[in-house]
Structure formats: C-alpha cells, structure tokens
Image (cartoon, rainbow, N blue to C red):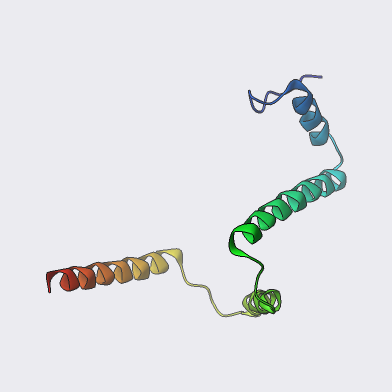
Length: 104
C-alpha cells in the first residue's frame, strides 16, 4: 500500500491516518468528515463568540426562519450575468456619488 503525500508538512502518521480514512466505506467516511467539521465549526464559532459576544436572543430562530423561507421560495432565480451587471451599476453609481461629494 502506498501512502500519498498530501501535505509535505504533514507527519507520516497523519498521512497514514488520512490514507486509512480514504479507504473507509462511504457512510463511515461521511460520518468521520461530519465529526471533524462539527469540531472545526464549534471552534470557529467559539472564536467568533469571544470576539463579538453571544448572539442576541432569538437570532437562531430568525436565521432558521430566513433559511426556511429561502428554501421554500420557488420563484425563478436571477442569472449570474444579470446580478453582476446590477452590482456593477450600483458600484458605478456609488463611485460617481462619492466623486460629486468630494468635489462639492
């Protein structure tokens, strides 16, 4: 069995573990990835909480309601090109307004 070299800074033990994880059946590999991501997300959330404080009461419910509403929305999407044109126009207008403000 060959051991792939994913990251040159990665220890040989870590490389072996990663290679073994790749050999797991899909459901076990998915479970492992989920567990690793949960831990990473919890660490990231804790860091944000330390920097900004705890979310206001009701935030999670508000956020979930917004996600549910977006998922239930069956209106047609907006093509990427159209969104990019609209944003470019907004930015152009904002730059022009800023120039007028600075010249006044």
